Image (cartoon, rainbow, N blue to C red; front, side, top):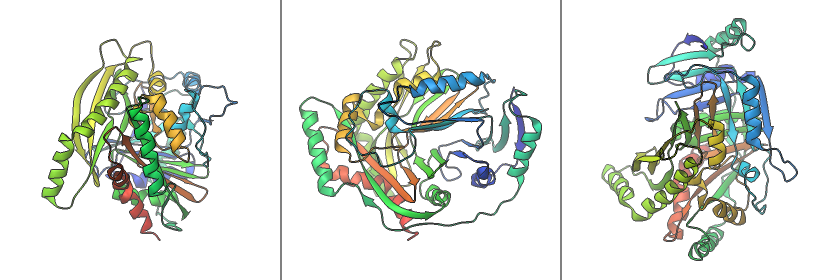
Length: 447
């Protein structure tokens, strides 16, 4: 049984994160509350007992998910599962899209111009878990006497109870600029259309990257963005040269009592300030033939991925083509579930499904080859994943869309969409802006 201590409930958990951030390697898995209606838990942690950092190269034959298994085995901790406490110590980190290069043989045409490792995962033996449904805040630590003792927890609790005034500043040094021109975007989509009609693939997720310079503390940028885009799979992770700021609405993989859940998003419409027009846009998305077909292609891909590690016949689609509404867009979301086979672990599930099919296309490997050919720069954290694997056996991870990387005073933000046979290039181009305009504009207000 884990060690648990109660702290005052805060509807906005950012103050708690600020109090422990200086401990190093701080992570904030953010449900978007109180503004987001979908999330429940915030998980805040820092000062990992151990950390692995992995970057793919042709000369590195080490398999990253083997490193995760070895890391988890070194601690050999098994905590009791609690439905109201999803994390009781365990692994937390990020998995960049380019980690897929360690799993599949892919071309290397896209330029690598960022330094963030493809995987950074730490062993966090304590965390603050904020439950917004029960309005409860719990400092939890593993109960093994050799890992976290009461005196250490006393110091952490004292920090969390200490009022700390925020300080610092953040500002862009210029407006965001895309790494492709509008003409280049349309040329890339024409090539994808050719590949689709030649039978190479059914769908390709193509993205452009928006970049600017910045100065100051990325955490202040994140606080501004979470007000503009409150979503249930947000995260802030301090990195060596900057930070990862994720405002993602999309769940990748969850494991709870052996039940696997994934919720791919495919299909988007902008929100409107006019209620009647907004309702019409929502209904249009719900019944759009193209978007439903696009969604179904990815659902079939994910059903296949889950079937590799789930019990035979257990993979189901209990919720097809549901519409979820966020601050700036409506999304078409499907839920796919399965029962994890007892011979496999959550890490095995993550490995067999990575990267998520909703952000590659179908078939997955061919789509990834085309992405590498047509996107000028590697994706890094974009379209990867952030999340936790708890010692109690639970796992929850996001797809890192609507995600920004701050590094060496440069900030990058990506936006993309699934391209299919009947995609209209002008509409797809506009959709990429619909997805991130609220983020770009919020930060451009700092100019």
